[in-house]
Image 1: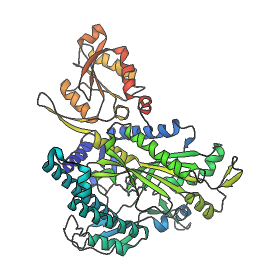
Image 2: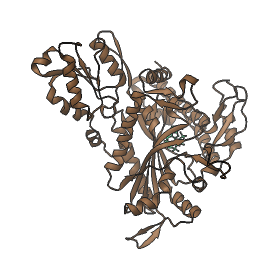
Image 3: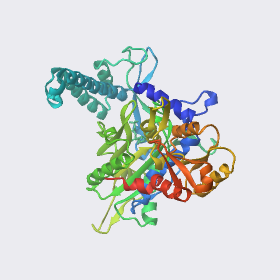
Image 4: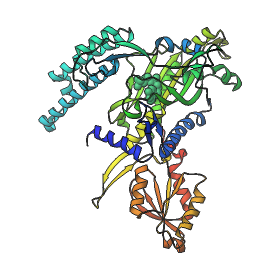
Length: 514
Ligand code: ATP
């Protein structure tokens, strides 16, 4: 199965099993807007808890807020979003399709990497056990040619982005002979800038309506509350403010399912530090965040850092954590050193002093900020694409199983009476009554046990508990584990401890190793 086929199957699976539906589907959907279904919302809530608790509960010096989506319009002037929150777009004149110019070039570079990898694989086959990859990469004329071309384009690309040189960006697209995937032609328009913010009117026209924006990031809600939180919480540097909330971007090219949405959710934490210590904290947060991802057990090789070619107007260092999605390594989270840009600009635009009095240094200053910013939806997609597995069983049957880490699984336990009579449903209900205050538990009595197992596998339920006739006399149930499909008999009174051991955030947090 190709990665593309896998991705299509995953999207279909998300819909079939109540994880994600296209928005307003009965009206044929709305571009790049999605709704989360009954299982999706549970997984999403668990992702948010994993993040929130790891920030707010595990760090004494991080607190949370929940700011409004609407903010004073001046906020977006101060932050630079009105003037500079642009993407460079380009149209293909034949297909009439619109693309992000920077993404076209990035995809071209990824293709060159793939070409090199193919050369390596060919050579490995040719030279067999004598193959020395390092030496081959350093000497093969073909590889060196691709590398040289790539490096030259990379340098031009970074320079063009930083200088906002749209003509050069187009020239790079032409020089790389990039074609439109739909029309196959190189008939491109010029590159133009496109502002990503959605705007609307607040108040009636008679009152003098104000243009307000739907926030394109949650971070500004934190910056404008910096003083409130610092003072009322008596916070001392370094300290952080965390927030989870919706953000909106009028993305030019909305592709790849929930990877790039127009309405999405962010989990952001702004960490306020002494000026001069920001690089140390940036490195520290890079490691902490990477460890948080890796603790989910999807394989360390599926994550990597990617430093930005173009630093945003507010940043002096920036890296992304990328995950190996079915469509390649792509950003899931950004870790940015934002300097004192945001607080400084709000100080300037609001006319209010936004400073911290440092008792150690005996002076006041505008703190520096290191931010960690991750999309809930991209995290969701990361988990679904890593968890989705098709397996052939020994008896020839196939099963689809979602290997979602147990702590994040939408449902933790499915309790099933073997038959719908003889008092078995009553025992099953009693087990549910005991567990339901702590865990998401479902009752299922329809179809054969095998079918019931498959249904639970498909939504990632870690445990199926079967009540049978022996249960009535020995007080034991059969627990079937999702990943191994192994079964064991355990006492009903031991059930809670067993479930807790596997699904608790406590144990997951203990595996985070920065
Ligand atoms: P990209 O380069 O993919 O557009 P970005 O660098 O603009 O992303 P940031 O502004 O750093 O993204 O936003 C932080 C995080 O928010 C991203 O790492 C991503 O997880 C999430 N995010 C950003 N834009 C979207 C979107 N349109 N849909 C879903 N998640 C998004």
